[in-house]
Image (cartoon, rainbow, N blue to C red; front, side):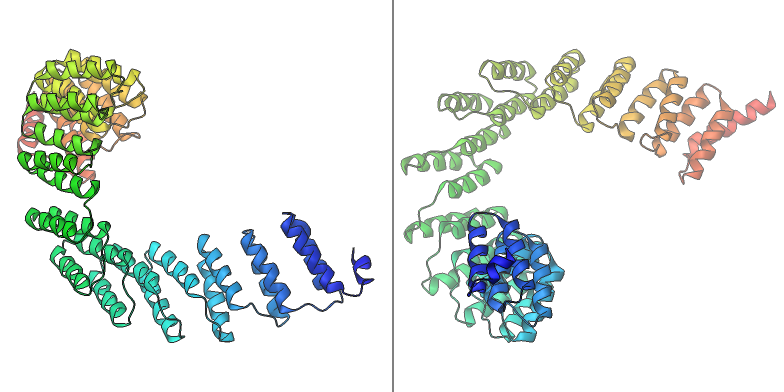
Length: 517
């Protein structure tokens, strides 16, 4: 190829045309080979050739090759233009190559070149995502010093980043700097600061900020109003939240589903059910149909207030509207279980299957706990088997609850079976699970089995705690196995645990009696 090209008069133009053709055809490897041939030939190469080619490599995400050719061009005395540098920095942000970004920024400074504002913003966004806030603020100062003025996107990114790490004072200070510099805050910047302040429970300060913006005649979007309403709801100031809703309507900003659902959630949590019902009616009057979340919130409020008959009627309405899911059933099943109406709860459980709604782990957990509290362990065990048969497994807490209940009701073998099922199903028992079973085994004079579990705990299981040692020692004393009890006591002290006065006294008395005999 080289011989053919050199025989032509405008060989550099031919190289460029070939590289362009290969790039357009997606033949990047051939483009790279042609560029290598071009720079090793006797034709003159310009800075623009490197800029164009490195630009292609950046676009194709061949960043290692881009770095290689960048080093090559530097040795030849060439440099990138600001736009190519900016593209390179932006691409490096995607792969979080902080080292090379800093190298490029240093090289640009030597050349008196400055990245474009969008490249700065992309880099600042990365630094904030990685919680490198001080580094981001340093870049802000550096860009201002070099004459690149921040725009509203720059300020929004930094304000969000500062709020994210709880540096609200710095965020407010930066907000005022933005205003003083003549940058008009967009809704994104305002929402970022309002959300940050509300998350830090500084809702009144967020309110003052919004009022200040409104005084300057800046329009606010629903997102900003919603953030403020949510903030007031979280600190229990519902009157102010409702006042914001009224104000936004007067200013031509229509409350949306999020606005109503935020208020609805607050009212239902506080059992302000009359107000919640009025909100639902207002939504429908305004042509804003309550969604699944709205209905589930109201259902939760009714169940929390123990108004189960009304909750059941609401469930029918939800079903008619096609707005009924597993959360809806879990809520009302939980309500009936809390009221000790387990039979009605179980009927609702059966109803779920008929309506094609599959129970989840939460459904089974609610019912199993309720039947255990009621003392109906056979139904609880049946539900557990059904649950695992559907490929759902309890968490450690539920398994331990079942084991503890079975032990307390004298069903030690069943409890032991559940422990083994728990391990087989991939849930690791904790020390509480083991202690419940060891206690039951010790109480029923099955010390050999208790000791086996104790040994399993020491060989890869959860480490025995103070309770475990006390249960084992007490059980061994009752069976007059004093020597073994002493060895366990020694082990206990090595672990830094101490024995109760009553148990240690009992052990010492048993030792004296054995010595006397």
